[in-house]
Each structure stands twice: as structure tokens, then as C-alpha cells.
Amino acid sequence: MYFYHMKKSFLSRLWKILLALLAAAIIGGGIYLNSLMCIITGYAAKNLCSAVFVSGREAADVEALDLNFSFIKFNRNKVDYENKSVSSRFLWHKSTAVYRDGYGVTLLRGKKADELRADAFPLPPEPACNPDTIGWPLGNRIDEPACPEYEALKDALEDISIAFVDEKSYGGTPFAFLVLHKGLPVTERYGYGCNEDTQLLSWSMAKSFVNAITGIMVSDGLVDLDTPPDFAEWQGDARKDITLNNLLQMQSGLEWNENYGNRSDVNLMLHREQDMGLFALDKPLTHEPGTHWYYSSGTTNIVMRYLRSKFSSDAEFYAYIRSKLFLPLGIRNAHFETDISGVPVGSSYLYVTTRDFARFGQLYLSNGTFAGERILPEGWVNYTVSPASDSEGGYGAFFWLNHNDSHPDAPKDMFFCTGHDGQQIFIIPSHDLVVVILGYSPKPDGVIDFNRLLKDIITEEELIVRN
Image 1 (cartoon, helix red, strand yellow):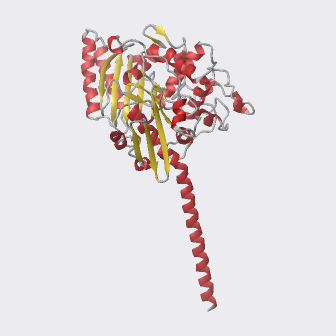
Image 2: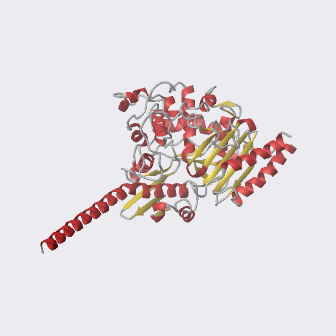
Image 3: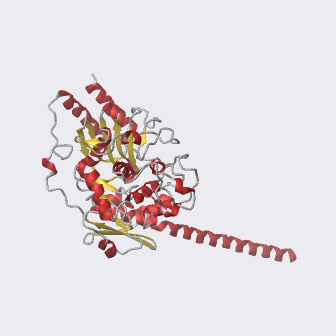
């Protein structure tokens, strides 16, 4: 009897322990899941709202393709066409994103929709001209040269274009494909309900536009590469030694987690924070500035916040970007979306047309000049493509490099802008090529074989132009 009671007591204690562990696991899992809710619902609301009201895509198509993964696909999304907003709900949590004409979409965090709309400021007027009547590159009228070389290259790349976009022979789901040779479009093709007027998401290609804005501000004497930003938060510790150059080369030394698959810094920044730059610059220092390279979207939003601080208002900063970068490139209707604080999200949220992305690539191919006008300061492109010391030849200043043969069948002088899910602007000086690719090509499945595509384009260019 004694052993029976001992056994019964032991089993009772064991059950209590197991139940306590189960309860702790359920509570812990619930707490962790709750911490993911802003990401799950925020991702769906923000991206669906931008796709519908900036890109003009059908909501059902976006849900079936772009949002059809992980927990994101379980959101219940409501598109309010009258008020131009999207609400996404998953279990007990809801996020709302709001479109404002001229500004794009902002995810509501700590502010109501009416308050956000009241924050709007007058935008500079559109140029009083029709871009379809203006010749390329400042306009959309493409006057093709009457030469056999151009026609032969156009025909050859047309076959590649069809194979890539229509037949998906290189993988992924392409939205747009455009190739410039010697500054002129030689092939242009659109898929999945897109056309030459569709503004598409840059994702991290926006970082390279921040490089350009920085270069222009350096030229104007507003910022200096070797001078640390004067953030009050950095003055009491070693972060005060981080330079603008360290930030542009992704060697700030600040703690950062860029893993998109969990409750990472980048996910929290994009989907929870009101002031993304402030969130990133508050991170502690983990390495001496300039000594360790690792990718950080937070770094770009720190830079954007710093650049904005040189102007008296959001309106003045917007006008500067428009007048100094966009309009000189013939980019007339860009949406550089902001966070709640009003600063453009330089890491991720730029919407322009495929042709506009090509114009931007041509700016760098032409060593900072465009249509005969110098936009970037002398030497800025050389600085941009100089490898960061710890990047093993793979990264410059908010541009990726091919010095490390990341694309082995492309020339080493190629440099490029890369965005989440396969957005690319490849700039190949030795072949006078700019290649723009936009679409939905997530890793690991469905990714585009960029190396093979580049190899085929370059092979055709060599066969026709160099023989």
C-alpha cells in the first residue's frame, strides 16, 4: 500500500509538471505569435494597398501571388476603394494601410487615417508636358536608329524576352523586362497585367536611389562622407564615430538582424515602427565601425533620416529629391513612400515605372550624367563601385558588385541594384548594357536564373555588336 501511494503521488506530480510545461508552452507560443501579428497583418495590408492603389493591380491577383505564403496567406483582407485603404486581419489582430495621392501608402502605426491624411503637404506640380511626345531618355518616345546592328540585336533579344516573360523559361514570375544598349531600349516586355505605365515596387533597389540622393547632397555641400551624423543618441558612446561612408558601405557596426523569416529587426522596422530610422539608429554597437560588413536595411533608413534632417520640412526634402534626381532623369510620378514620421522608407518602398528604373541604371552607366547633364558629382560612381573593405568584393556603397563572381557568367565590372523577391537593375559598363527585371521570384523556389539570363543577353550582344 505504501508503494502504491508513492507511485500515485509521483504520477500526480508528474502530471502537474507536464500540465505546467504545456501551459507554459501555450502561453509562450501565444506571446510569440502575438509579437508576430504586426508583421503578419502589416505585410499584407501595406503591400496589398500599394499594389492596388499605386500599381493598379487587381487585389485578387496580388493575394493569389504576392501574399500567398506562410501566415500571410491566412489574412482576411478588406480593400476600401472609396477611402483608398486596406485592412488585413489575422486572428485577433488587424493592420490598416492608407494611400495618399502623390505619396503612396503608409502603414498606420500610432496614428489614425484622418490624422495621416492631414499630414500631407503640397507636392511640386507635374511638368506641363506630355512625356509621350518627348524623345527618350527624358521622355517615352523611342526613336529607333536605322542601323542593322540595332535591328539584329532587337530581334535576338526579343526571343529572349518572350522566353523569359511569356514562357518563364528562366524561372520566377516576371512582371517586366527591359534592356538598354548604348542608352536605347532594345527589348521591353510586360507580363501579369503590367505595362509601361505600371509603377512597380523596388524593394531594396531603393537603397541605390538613396546612394544617388546622398551623392547629390555631397555635391551641394549638405553632407560629407567622412563626417559622422550628428545624432544626439550617438554622442555618449562609440557610435559617434560612425561615418556616413560606414553607413553607405553597410559597415556601421550596429547590431542588426536582416532575416525576413521571423521576428527580425527588419520585419519589426517595416511593420511595427513609426520612425524606422530612429529604430535602427538606437541599436547598440557590436563591431568597430568600418571593420565588419553585413547587410542592414536599417542602415539605409538611418541615412535617409540623416539626409532629411538637413531640410526644414518634409515638403522641402521631397521637393529636393524630385528636382535634383527624379525630374532630371525624366521620372515624373515617383512614389517614395514614407513611414509615419514622414521620412521616405529608403530601404524598401519606392514605386516607379520599369522605364524609370532603366533611366536610373543609365545614370550610373553614364558615370553620373544623363541626357548631357551631370546629375551625380565627378567620381561618385567610382566611389560607389569601390568594394567595402570587409565585403569580399561583393558590395560597394548601396550597390552590389560582381567582383566576387556572384554571377560567374557576367563581367566583373557589372554592378547592380537588388531587391526582395527578385527585383534587379544590372549595369554592365563593358557591354554598354542596362538590364531591368521586375516581378515575383521568391527564394528558394521560383527564383529567376539571373546568371543564365545575363549570359544569354551578353552572348547575343557579343555575336551581333562585336563581330
